[in-house]
Length: 247
Ligand SMILES: Cc1ncc(C[n+]2csc(CCOP(=O)(O)OP(=O)(O)O)c2C)c(N)n1
Ligand SMILES: [Mg+2]
Image 1 (cartoon, rainbow, N blue to C red):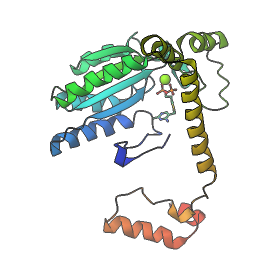
Image 2: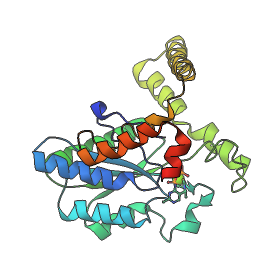
Image 3: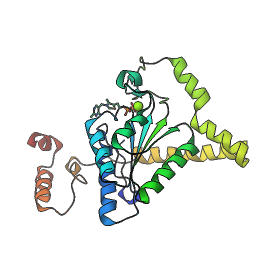
Image 4: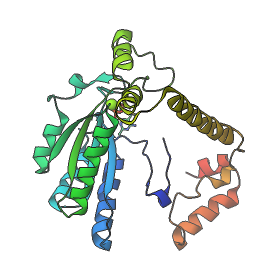
């Protein structure tokens, strides 16, 4: 959830629903100010689109014609609330009209369709033609969190999507038909991916827990004397309990 990698252009995933959207607008503004060929791209859920900061951010990017792409993963549920209990429209893409920017509806279960839609939007943004709003119609196979009882939907509904609309199965079938992907090559690819994920999990499990006094590391920009003072005070306190009491 909190993955970030500035060197890969990943500014960070946000625990606050919708909070990644202003970051994308900010990144797009940075691209504009620095005259770079960068595009700010934000992934947000159907549960985020009705939030104030999402509206403000998209409106600003539209008004300033910034190079941004907003991709809504409409998976029909926001935590445990169904789409129709939250929205009065069928297609979230219709909302783009309010900002005066183009929108695209794409099958979010079709890997190449999503790739094409994002590529077109990226090119538009980089060419100086402003933001695009993409609605990817998709589905959440698992609960919102581990242990989610999922009382808000039926098992049949989940199985129907899993069996007929799995994007990996669909893409594999497409590769078999169009690119002669063999069963053995596919099995090989899958085991490579599983091994990579298992290695990553083992690596993570083998790490030691960080010291409590590191709690403020990488939270603020380095080099500001006020922030250094604030952080060093907490480091001097040594224990997490004292850090928390101080707050
Ligand atoms: C501002 C804010 N309100 C409420 C929450 C609690 N919350 C976490 S995820 C979520 C639902 C988000 O829905 P969606 O974006 O559709 O994500 P999905 O459930 O499909 O993963 C809510 C309400 C939060 N993290 N931030
Ligand atoms: Mg959702």
